[in-house]
Image 1 (tube, rainbow, N blue to C red):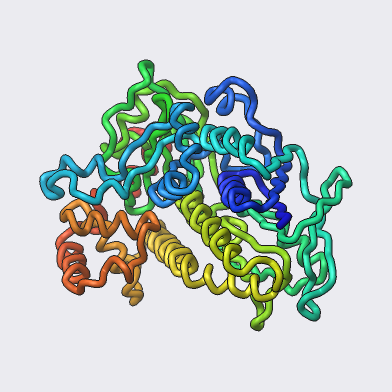
Image 2 (spheres, rainbow, N blue to C red):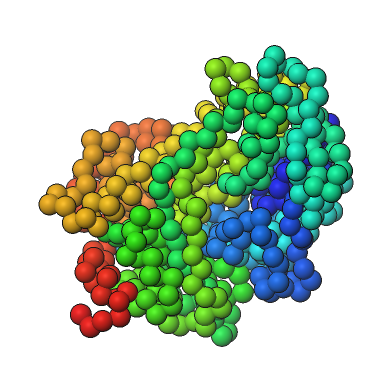
Length: 477
């Protein structure tokens, strides 16, 4: 089978390698140049990826994505290690807590790898170049989709792509791995397709990030947990390769007062208010300015309408299908799982009946990934409403009758108080298992409610709104 993959990011290259190793002839097309010479530092300093807005924002290969690489593409793990990727475990910081009681059998499932995204892509690119049947064409943007004989009346059948340079690339299947800003949806509508129909949150988050490097290649003392939520700010600390790390402040896109965090002085004064991460901005040498990431609204694209695919011959995976909040770093994991689902489906269905393939892929995606994606989207909606209430200083805090939101918040605040809840939180929070799979024992859910009631609203009280604004302004308290 001849397959075209649009996009040479982590999801596109993972899908391409999985398909090529099953014997398919795969061509990957990407508008940007490839990794420059110079190893990991060359990739970080000189690799320009204008097609990927978040290229230098924090990424980490969380357990679900790492397990996919270990099981399916172990050469990538070896290459990434050679480039300086650091093996670690999601729970390592919590093992020292008295309430957690150390490491347990089975904790190896939380293994992951720390590396900056350019380094991850460099490793994937190096291995992809050695896979038989796989060709990666850089600096080759797709400008249009080619059509063939309709297989579903009134719905276009995609039979390949046209590049901006005028090349025609025929394919039995086109896989869209073009990310959250993929142009493929627009190209489908240009062909007369009735979609995809995009659902997009009106507002999302903004992230303000700075990278640091240690002088001796060692990391400073690391927070027990990488993500923490406070009244109107979330903090994220992500380790990288070669003694690098990133610190991010996540805020509501509607919080205009905190947009001043793009200024280094305001950013550093604000980070200093959070004891768990303050030292991370003091002990290293800054290796970037303050990087602002916008466009973090949750999106979901529906490719089946009224029981029919919007087109045949094309399937979308990863962020090209749906996005999650980048503050949680789940994009690569969701994409790796999606790529594996596609590979497994093609083993049984093939492309002989493209309508059946499109419907079956939609069915599998909705059953396996949609509940996780929609659950995260609902978390975003409630969190943004909660922040908005705190900003407006309304008499009563944000309230909702959504039991799932209350359960997730209780689990988050109680996770470091009980070893079973910690692992349940890690399983569900990194896509290793669904909530239904994890909370089969009612006693575990009852423990969440009990400990959640006793825990504070957030794991740590954090600064007040007034203290945040004072720090940003740089005035005396």
